[in-house]
Length: 346
Ligand SMILES: [Zn+2]
Image (tube, rainbow, N blue to C red; front, side):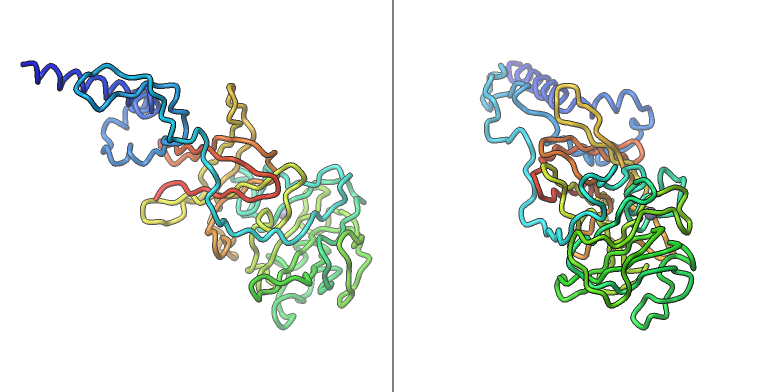
């Protein structure tokens, strides 16, 4: 009898502890009736282990005595640390001067996203600035294209249209950086410019004026569209510029991979970022890369990311990823000048 009572008491304490430790598992189960029909395996996909400081809860002891001790779980760090050896290749700077109206990518329409379904899948980043704002060389480079993009002048033989279709950028400037990456050439394209002061073959130094922000081609308003192309000067060879542009002073970049249990990328899912403060202040959100067959956007060769967020002030954050009724959560630390990378799911 004593053994049965002890066993029941132990179960109640452990269950109560689990509710305290991971309340969202149980709240979700109650709030969403369809959850009740799901298997425990699905619930187990939530990754709450790094989302709450364990010091706020009590910890049951390993003895028969079911009285919880107050021993804090000192071995569990209260914040997640960046994964070691995240490949970083911040090779270049910003395409507009530091005093420009905006020298950070517009967060509504980041690389690989659709602006919440409003637009085609984005192959670059938008720097929204008034007409006439100078665009400058992001690094020491050679100009390979400058001017209207109605005719083919990209691709290995110059036989490829530079964008999705002719006159896509209106006018485009494309640089081939002096610095290659793992033997692959790195190109940076500036779309929709209204003026250009350079010509193909010309050498440019970082910060040198190349032209002016415009609204040429398909642009709906004044901005410069920036693309990173790796290995080929092709619209099919783009990569996420956030992974290549040095973060603004005092900030770092955040990227991640949201995948299913088979390791396949989950597309068009919402990622929300909050400050890890008492209020959980909302910072921003984005979408995982959508499918675009015309052509695809490309994850980094080593990271395999499917979302990235630019220029977060150094500090601690909580990231949520939404997949159906599941919410993945992860605490992250952003370091000055660095890339933090996280994987959800799988
Ligand atoms: Zn764009």
